[in-house]
Length: 240
Image (tube, rainbow, N blue to C red; front, side, top):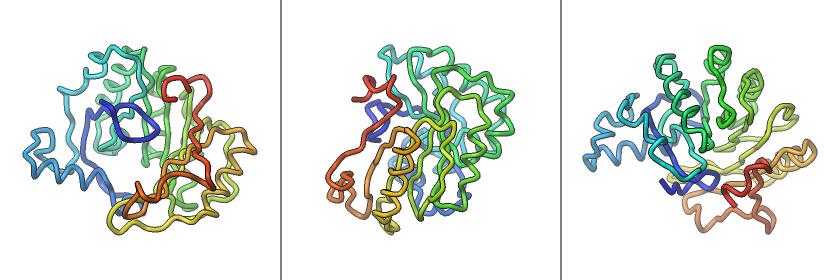
């Protein structure tokens, strides 16, 4: 509850742990956090960052009566190849039943997402997103477009290179952010501006999360003097 992630309100982790598949994973915050929680003796993280399904966490959103924005699997990837399709379906069943919430699902495994999409009954309260860190992974956007999710969004974070000529057809939201923490790779202002301008031209809401760096609070999240907090307009009252 009460997540510090700027573009959501709460997090729900019916699975934890993951494996790295692309450059954006290099300094994975979830891996660092999982190992820290393991060292603290947190039972849920007894396996550290090894993929672990948590049956006991599946019903959690049904216990939260206040409608809110919920980021699903901030500590994992629902479409990881080792997650059984039956478990994916059970997560979707809970999201469907908890119809008073909005759920944000984010993956780097866009190929598996596309392959399973037709088997999924997409509730209207589920947002589906993909992470794209540089131009080599723009194919994930094409995979996302094949889904029947009502809202499809992009997490362009950590942004590690320019993303020119984005095809934003069928995309409803874009989040951009620089990498933070030890060893953070720098983001260039021109990369962010180029994405913002493409979003403005395509009328896609643009959300700038952070500049990042070793001290992300000091770096802030203003882009040329302005905070960009746009989200799909019909849901703005939930966050702002």
